[in-house]
Image (spheres, rainbow, N blue to C red):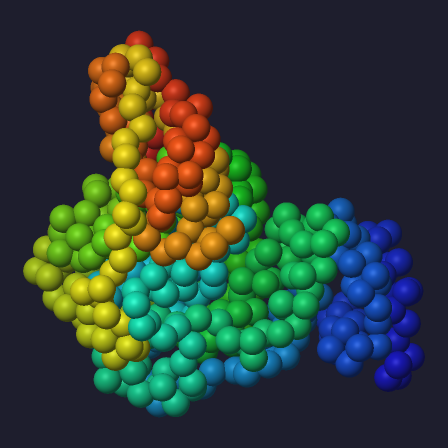
Length: 424
């Protein structure tokens, strides 16, 4: 072990709520990368952080260590202020596919490295890879070339990006500390720093379909995200959006790509367009460009962002004209008349994931919500349409979906999509 650093003493210090400084955190991170501490010790440390937290300087030291543990993308060859966005996870959230080309259409480059599905939430890379031929893994030279040519790159995280974060996350997952908000924020920012963008917009989801169930949790995460970004010298805006119900109507990889394409020419669901416009405005503002909501909506309707998205997909090998369609499609019917009070959003996400990727990859499978919260339906009318590869999957998913929709005699209160926002 280098120097006089003692990992057991460091773990004990964090466990007891004593202040750990940046140098101690750096030493511990270096010891993890060097294989000088055991997985059990790292897991014990994550549990200590879960209960006691970390001092701001120690948390930033961890974030920097994770960011610098692998490849750091240098985006300086791309002209302009490069922006990125991140969602904390939701159901039906395909905003990246809409926001990125919308922002890029104003001449502000968007270079985004995205992840795969996690838990009940979908992943941007999974959606993009439902497009036949699409290459999500790009070399640095390809990212720079595409960024300079189009001002738009949507790619996947490689194993060389923040490998220390991946190791720590794996251990957090195995010992029930994934929910640690400081470690969530550190993980997010470490990958963003490694991705090389100049500023970030974070869409922090709040509600039963999100990882942050309450506004208190969401604000705590936003605080850590803003503080870490500020310490790193990066611009940062946080927007809170409701995940009381799925975003848009489509839940499932190819289904969500189609819905994003509709939104990219101004024909998407109102909530998807509303959130996309808000996020795009925040991203452009970080780059010093003030664009109003009407102008952003008009740009979507012009079809220019869709053209840019299609060019990006083509440059990365994708064939949108071959986007798959599920062979079996059948509605879930209402058993009684009434107003839709809401959907069990987290269960919807889990069911969709079971169709699209847990058993066998099926990019065309998913759920299409027909009667959203507040809709009035009669007995026998469709609540949703299930898209599957087999009759077996169709019957199984219909049975699982049946209890997810709640009906009542009166229309429910409206839940605002945009809840609040703060900038740091």
